[in-house]
Length: 267
Length: 358
Image (cartoon, rainbow over all chains, first blue to last red):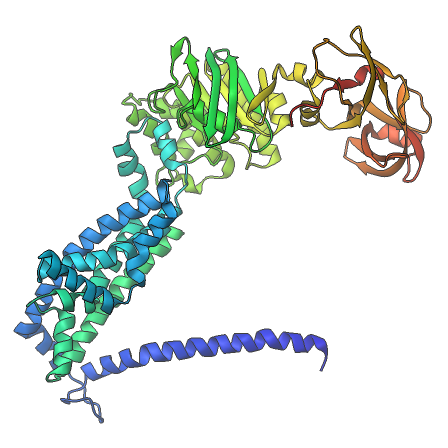
């Protein structure tokens, strides 16, 4: 074998390994989700073969009062969290990307810190803090807790958009006579609106799917994730995979929208 | 008239612009030229109001505008990257300053587009992202002129365009300047643009104005080695001054043959350090025919189209020089590589210069 073919073997091998790795990742990621979805359509009390198709569990999930109240609590948390973290995250992103100030890099590290904290510890810490400060537990503490965790993620998403905007654009607008309000309203915000919307979608999905923070701070409220967790530990019912699948469908749809918006804005 | 007095900008311990003074007549085309990082853009941003000077004063027609905001001063800046609003159409971009300043726009957009040689019917409703570089440049110009500024500041706006388009837009800019009663202040590192367009030229380096005057004055009489080298392709010969008296100097150069005395004044001018001769003021010939010359070996002959660059090496000192000659001259003498010859010139074309700060 010549030297030449020896050398071309290495990239081939590494490409092969890379594809193999990709297949494994998808298999590990998708198999549990896929089995959950299949189980949600199976008529048995526990998932077993032979498979028999039904929509019963979906209709049970949609009509169950406990599920309805869990969805209601989740929405009462997710919507304020989405609004708050989108505002805070966007403000942070604008500050970080469009202004220069002393300690800018430290600001980024501190702002992104909550993302790198294990959620279970973050939830525990927040729970202790809620107790110490007398804030207590319930919808409002859950909203505050989730906002603390989600705002940096929104900041990250909006920053990507804001970094893509011409660095001189505000200066150009100011030079042409625009006041600060006009610069934001007519120039900067329209240019990063796709980033803000995807940030908001991310915020909603993350809040919707959150378990750890909400389980520590919710008090007596039951949200979708805590309801599922409860059912998993005390009395499994096939409504669980149906509800979990529905959450997955909603998340998938929203993430798809977010990705499409990002693609459109980067075009 | 725009007047700057002792204008200074410091960033911590770095001085970006050092005590600059100038006066620019209303309606003229002034160019600030200098190498990258010389402080020219900082100077322009101070004139636009985007940077506050550390010290000094800017006056427009006798009114102090040093501290007025960019919105309120009658200047408009065209950015190097144009900074058009990508989510707006051509017409919306031009309308932006008209709306922001609360002016009436009736017919103004069409007039402005015509002024910058864009057909209003074809371009007004186009998205700016669909335009070519040259068209974007024209829209940026129209947008900056929309509220009739007294002074148009241009920060190398042609730098990213191709050569032919640059030439075309340079001509159009000078025409526009003549048409309007607006002062144009153009910042560039390109000497060629500076020479073509300006009435008034400021050569700047290390934050200070080194020389000012008409392009012709500066080209013909550079004050020091820096300006001479910056203004045009030139050969530099380091010299030692042996005697200086009565506005003349006598020099000592190991290989320079011919005249060794040159006029040099006034008496308080710094000691000269070099002779500078432009490439196109020299010729390379087998024997010494001019009053000044240096024995060289031909290293390379490059055809530039209408002229040829003859690269030579000093026989003794190993320094390299260039002569720009007509193609006829080169073929008449039939110069080839490794020929022994003289790089020579008329002593009148010699600039005897101090080194300069840089």
